[in-house]
Length: 454
Length: 161
Ligand SMILES: Cc1cc2nc3c(=O)[nH]c(=O)nc-3n(C[C@H](O)[C@H](O)[C@H](O)COP(=O)(O)O)c2cc1C
Ligand code: FES
Image (cartoon, rainbow over all chains, first blue to last red; front, side, top):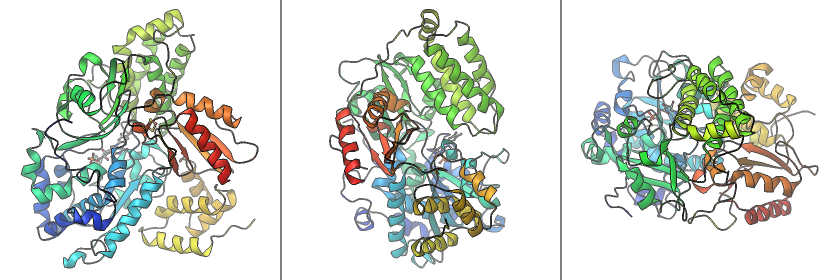
């Protein structure tokens, strides 16, 4: 395994029963909380600002700055809320699940410190409905934390109160978008809200100021308080500080969740961490940041895995979901697969997204069934322009839809067609794929062999 | 059929209400509770019952419920088998998993077997991409699937039924 393996988020990897409070506390859990409760709450926000930690949910917005938008002290006129985004439904992403299963107490500790910093006395963890077992783990961990006096009234004698509740979603990708999530938390359809306000810190859940952060973002907080924002800022690269959990899936020998310093080279990740491409095959492409982000061709994969480097490469770190594809992959199939997903997950509020996604999916379906016409390729691109355009603004236009689901569907579509146009053209001209689809079941080297229900 | 929570469910319900500043916010958890209590789906009677409990209209409840894929408005098989067919799973052979299950169970995606045991559906990324291909059976995830494992799982479920 590669050097400079600093572990912030996966420090308890390999420790048995690390989800139990006694085990977690033996390995340092809740010591940062004790320190934090003796600090001024503004000093905590300052540390988080100094750390430079950027949101791990997809957009990479600096967490400390977002915390600073919350009205505290004299500016606080209504109750403040903290909401943790554990919806994790961006295809290719499964790292929050790891954190919840293995280290729920790090997350809970982070939530308590965060709530103390932004003066919230009620916090929710919004977890996707399918993560039922993970919700049970969290509920058990929360119960343990209440019993130890880390939650509830007058936490550790500090005078600070916090109530924490797990709220289960019920199957809808869009509820990961923070304003849809807030509607869902209020018992409504998961419809994204019209912006402005751009941040729920102005108007969030129950019409009150709300801080929404991803699980991984919050999980970094105890370490930052324990070791200082300065120490955190020295990990990774300038403006891209700290480590990142990468969820690696697809055609590698060892898929899984890896904690790496931001800025690790993508090829190092694939070869040194993930055991390379599955036996005897060649790398063809990588989606580096969850399915909504533009694909990188093999020759573009000599790139650093951080926010800025991937942006410069024409893609994005997004959620850190790394989907690796070998040469047996048909890109027309990939495009259709993703478009079907976005067509299914469109909430239906905005016409470009509601109509455009299924329209593109139907055109791809037609190409795939051998009835595509050469002009269909331009037609798909044209529709994509109307839905969300391209990531570099070179075509179409951003902001045609209330939320970024439009872009989430159009960016990968445009990239796939631009970079693998020959495959689409071949299909339309010859009515058969250039790369014949490999439907066989593949078994990575670290596969679970037994039948177990997890 | 009259619909009413058991005493244990009532206790859970009362606790849920204490966790939110208003009743409507408890709607998602109450729908989950109702589905678990009333035979794995939410009937029109259950909707009426929930609406009364939460001071909502039946339309409010239906409006919210119909947005989400995990609430069922019709009876389902004892085992709801949801196969992920999103990209990472597809790359690892999800469509072969689908074919295998359709053959084994003698039903197509979207159908329920005649004995009422299995409902087969396609699901979207379930957060198991690193252990693809995978499927969800009610609240259990089965990962790194292959033909052999699928056969074993279905046999196991049949035994359990
Ligand atoms: C369509 C869509 C889906 C999203 N899904 C998720 C998700 O599953 N998890 C998540 O943390 N953020 C998701 N986001 C981003 C959130 O809106 C929000 O930016 C994030 O939770 C903020 O937390 P952070 O600043 O800590 O990253 C999604 C955004 C969009 C537009
Ligand atoms: S793609 Fe199947 S679990 Fe993510």
